[in-house]
Length: 355
Ligand SMILES: [Zn+2]
Image 1 (cartoon, rainbow, N blue to C red):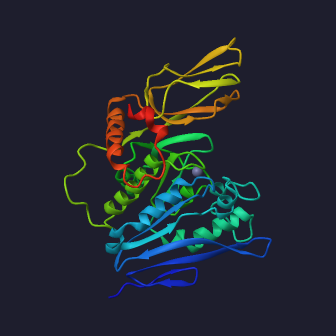
Image 2 (image 1 turned 90 degrees about the horizontal axis):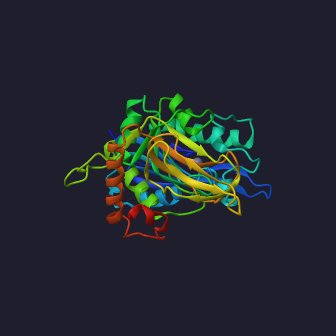
Image 3 (image 1 turned 60 degrees about the horizontal axis):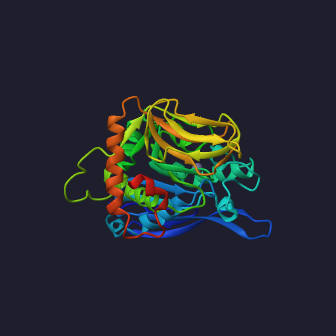
């Protein structure tokens, strides 16, 4: 029996075809209608319906490029199931180059939303009723906030075995078994029992080639794991790609001042190890910021001007560092060869990591 068409926002996408659908979301006060563009690749054969979305925080743009490259992959011709690609969820924020909506709300705290609620609530409602509730799996693509650079990592609630399977398949070096934040797309999807993983990598308003390349690889690996794509020929990955941290810790500045980073992204640190120095402009008072635990540095704040209490480093906690280090070594060695071809930006943030 032929597969049914995929229905979205009044459109029908036939099996074996792909289509860009404009999901109407709002009108600007200029009277201009606003849409969330969605590309649906509807395979001929039954299978999972995977939503991959980016820029729910409007300034987190790496995911948009990750989705563009995934959609170019010629292997999609053999797709089993359906890929629902939503590169720009927060179109308001994307146009304004900001994380937030025009009413300054965070769209990723507005789920499940409502038809009659705030702007964010209405967009969340639209997204879930038009798209989310018709999919079986979700990958949500994020970056660090402005001036904060994230190591490629997966955040997921690993209690759900299907979620854990996706997290492992993605192959980012670090997985964090992260609790669900109320109002987030991830928490809502989880409440519907839809397996969902969040990819984090790079920083807001910047492209990063290593992050983009590892995001594209990750999405394709998850699709192969879900048997939406044929398995890759050739030898299996020689080692385990990812290591799971039980939790992670934000390390904050104890004083206002100017920060000099010491530890770099992806570095292994021990409890008590120096991460950065903070000093006043004359260097009269100076304090070291140290790591409260052993682990891997998964986020670095790139802005040297810090206030007391500001989050500066994020450390994934590993009491035993051996396996986490192996996952980092594997990541380093793999991106060196993989990044080159489609490079759109230099990889300077990673110079330290490559040494
Ligand atoms: Zn985000």
